[in-house]
Length: 224
Image (cartoon, rainbow, N blue to C red; front, side, top):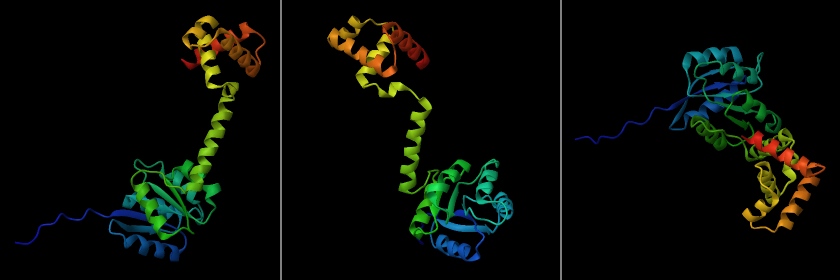
């Protein structure tokens, strides 16, 4: 009686978009040697790629940014109009420090430079097929730094300069607590709470206790 084995899962189908035939040929060989991946079709320009992707419904697409006519970024944006756009990996010679964020904003899930190893390209493909973002460690660090800078700039709040304890005192003032009540709740001396209040007024540019209370109440209301 012959051994019964589970059938191999279907290979994930990849659509290639690059205006260099040699690049497409190399990528096809690279991808087709993987047991779980295969190239289903390819295109050399954005118009042909869009039509081909609509027709073949691939599991993912690898797109170069430099194409004849419409750019890779424009193609990525157009693909987002589809009911089920494929996850997109950008494979480009352009500097990731400048283009990776733009590609992700356009709708791509991953960005790999052409100088990277074949192993990283395959790893990136598998990541986007899982719905995960793939960028280099340098790009991830750059994005995190930009996010933190933007968040700080967006709030533009002097409250960022308050210590944790000062912020807690400020919050309690906003909820209507008096200094003595705050000192009892936080197990601090009244003098320490008063010192915190003085520091808060200085950091926030508030003239007196009335201005401090008004600002604290306003802040608490905004948090709700």
